Length: 238
Image 1 (spheres, rainbow, N blue to C red):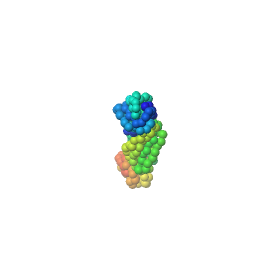
Image 2 (image 1 turned 30 degrees about the horizontal axis):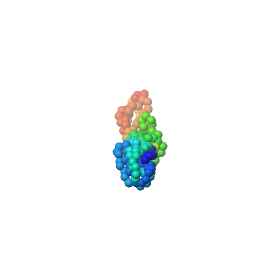
Image 3 (image 1 turned 30 degrees about the vertical axis):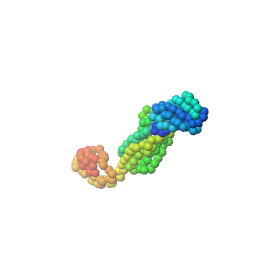
Image 4 (image 1 turned 90 degrees about the vertical axis):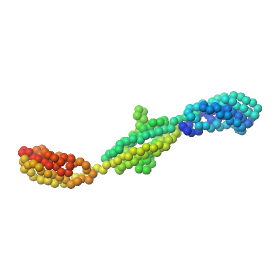
């Protein structure tokens, strides 16, 4: 009996090796799959395909073979390589302003590049082929510019060995609206030198949380910076 058929599988997948048999059927073999010795009887035809699920890289050999008349030892071997499943983690910014870009970072923790990644944005599926992560950080950065708050969710990753893993992980990028355009400033247009406690204000601006004011030389903001209303004093040189 001769064993042949080097192969590569992903973790959890079955491997198949071939055993050529000579002589007269039926045959019986004792096959060693790298972990267990398995007796197989009443084989009716050659080649015999032995299927098993390897726990790691393993070498398969036939220890003994018998046909209808004689017994012998096997020869040859088949090496089965077991590739790990790829994996990926998603991370990124939580909040941006409308019109800004955000970095969505994918960190690949297992498997062999290049990768194919499937993910969704607000339920719509996207695919990125041929990803080669940074050699040091193992990351791939996707720059996005969502127009609204968006959920980025992992779905599946596949590596160059054809190993596939369904993955989970979600980030939410919140998009804050820009402030509206300020209206007209109300307050005195003409003031006297040395005048104090002059109030200037504007109406509330949509989506604004802070108000920045500037005044001319000779004027000082006494209070209200950051709010809709400020109090200003003018010195005698104004």
